[in-house]
Amino acid sequence: MPHSSTRKTDSWLRQTGIVLAALGAADAFYLWLLKFTRNEAMCVGSHGCLTVNDSLYSEIGGLPVSVLGLMAYLAILGILVFERRSPLGAEYGPLAVFGFSLIGVIFSAYLTYLEFYVIRAVCPFCMASAVIMTLLLVLSVARLRQQNSCSD
Image 1 (cartoon, rainbow, N blue to C red):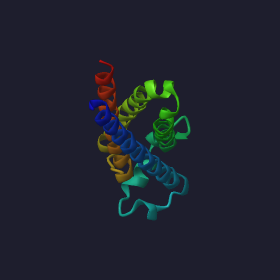
Image 2 (tube, rainbow, N blue to C red):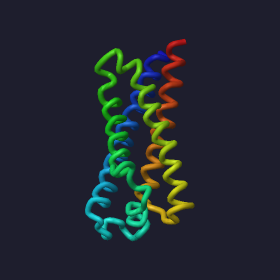
Image 3 (spheres, one colour):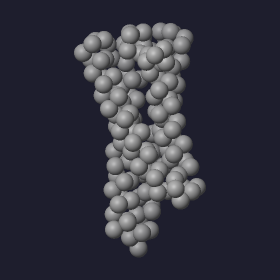
């Protein structure tokens, strides 16, 4: 019966990933709204959000970093939701989520460095995004390890 418990664990990891990716997408969308509206009330007690969102580092080629985050979270969410619908998705979905989340964590680490040491302001929503992406990376590693142990 190890396969049954393995499937349950993978299902739990996948469902948790879906929830985290949805939360990350909501957070990134909120950050985009904040950038677009410049509404200080949306910062919820922290002026760091506006400082970070107005900084030189909040855009790449005119594209808000929050939009990049939103696209990454939606890609991860899409992979997790649809990976069970095809053999290709089942085989490569966990690896794709790992790739997206690894790039997301590296980029989040860079942005967090900029917040603390260059911009000198902290955006709680940006930090939440970094934590969510890190949790997605941890889950993706667990899923890959589980996938590899099942194929042995």
